Length: 271
Image (cartoon, rainbow, N blue to C red; front, side, top):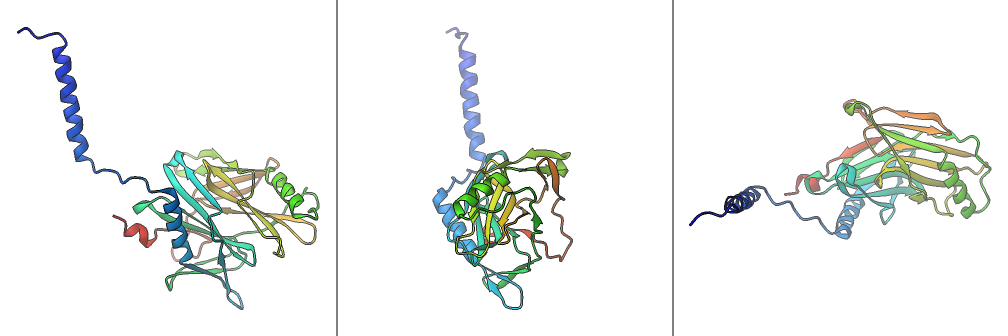
């Protein structure tokens, strides 16, 4: 019987399909994405196992806020699971940390928000000693802090809008990524606290890369500070004038930087 003109095409389609099946069998199956709620609960449990203390004349044990202050992702860098937590002392934020990734890619990162050293332990073993992590600066041009917490929040949001931040990857030909300010603080001191401090973040996706601290002082003045959540360079402007030029995070050996990234045992034990 004479072959139809379509026969070679059909044979080719079948052979390609069989080859694709065989090839797919050689590729290890990717683990399914975990349930996001379950992932967050696991990270919360891991972070609860850390112990952070301010190192001064008397040790001040920091308190982990019970729930993440930000649930985030960054599809641009293939990070689909991320969560940010904060540790406080009498309501004042003293350390911020994020968990991101999963399985062997799981990472923990921390940055001190304190002007004093912080000692970190986990399961009874020393993790790190953080040098003071921030430098407060006067925020000129701001109105006197309002009497009520609600009005101060509005003021804080307006003052945060005066800043712009950019992430710079020096190893990628100084690739610049303008960051977006989330309109509301991810944490704010309770009204019972002595000082009123808000944490704003500049993000890629919803991934916090730069932390802006704003504080309304009892003397009716404002001040601000920055912290990183990335090892790349960070720059920030206030009213169009540069006020931050943070180099890449490249601490010398055996130093005590204010920012660290940790591969936790949970990642090393992952299949």
